[in-house]
Amino acid sequence: MRALCVFCGSNEGARPEYAAAARALAAEISGRGITLVYGGAKVGLMGILADTALAAGGRVVGVMPQALVAKEVAHRGLTELHEVASMHERKAMMGDLSDGFIALPGGAGTLEEVFEVWTWGQLGHHRKPVGLLNVAGFYDGLVGFLDHQAEERFMRPEHRAMLMVEDGPAALIDRFAAYEAPSVQKWISREER
Image (spheres, rainbow, N blue to C red):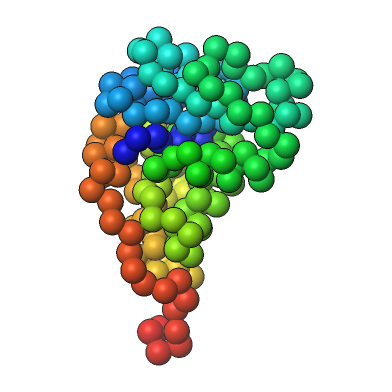
């Protein structure tokens, strides 16, 4: 793995564990010599993540739409900051620059980003690992719902398993290193029900 993309909140959230997890993930990524790719902001968990990786001597690449740069939330101390025209371009560039994707706690944008790259993987557009860092049980409800979707045959168990879930950054990145994308079609036939 040369580069990992991290999706996370532009707010810090209610618990100190979220910021601690952002620091731990940044330290783990930097300590392994992996480039951090993220949304480019200086605020919230995004800023904590970038600042920690930079302080550890890591390489940090941000990708931010010009509209957000204009609102002065861009982190100006990054190794690289790519300004793009839209959120669509942002996600495409982050996908191209990265060998895997991790979601820390965050809001609707974080969920949208991780679901999109996971869907790309299900459709075979990439063979990169995708995972949730389940800090203080943040994603427990979502994981239960995703398991329910698989049980109700709206997704294959192999596709549900593509979205890895771990409590600690080292365990998640270790699983990423061993990841092999499944080779099954997305659609479930009537005969398989």
